[in-house]
Length: 131
Image (cartoon, rainbow, N blue to C red; front, top):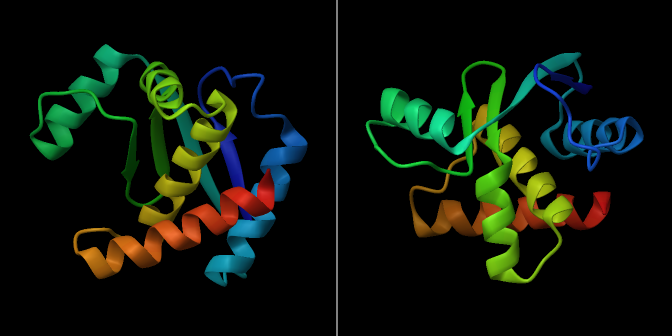
């Protein structure tokens, strides 16, 4: 089963019971049988921009980056702006980003329209199941 290890302060929006539930749902959806730990770090806009520049050669901040094999960086400040723009709770957007990052770690991508359709459908199914 997937277990999340937070390597920075955890927002109150991520209570441990919800993270356990998310790990169970993701493990089932991705057919994960072995224990898997994923490090999650919340970073500032400036830190995220640096990570995006170093790893993707894009000198702009982004919402989430997934690093092989087991690490995810999330920019809560970016997520808050996106949640406001979309008219959804910040908690839901942060959860969506965490799910999105995990899917990338396990080989999912959205480089083509078909891949995007499949990945985002699974992502939203998991968001719905966990919220």
